[in-house]
Length: 79
Ligand SMILES: [Zn+2]
Image 1 (cartoon, rainbow, N blue to C red):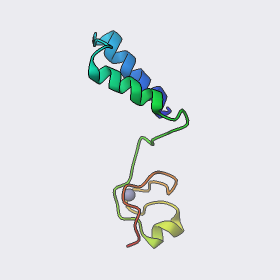
Image 2 (cartoon, protein in one colour; image 1 turned 30 degrees about the vertical axis):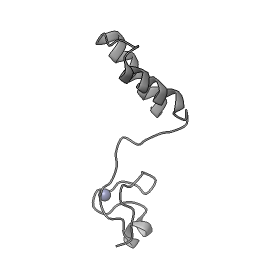
Image 3 (tube, rainbow, N blue to C red; image 1 turned 90 degrees about the vertical axis):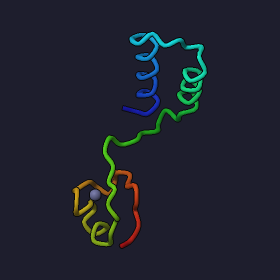
């Protein structure tokens, strides 16, 4: 699910299911963030916190958690 779509889901859920007032500052802020979010932005559901190694580059995935190199790695440094 794209980030914009996900954030809108959360926004609607807060307003409709939990009765949050859409005029309060934090709901307006959330709405602004949603409006400014690129529709193509996609944050993966999983991330790797391991130190990225040259071996991982060769393998194409993290040797410790098997998460692919295509996924955003939190600390992608050589080591
Ligand atoms: Zn990992």
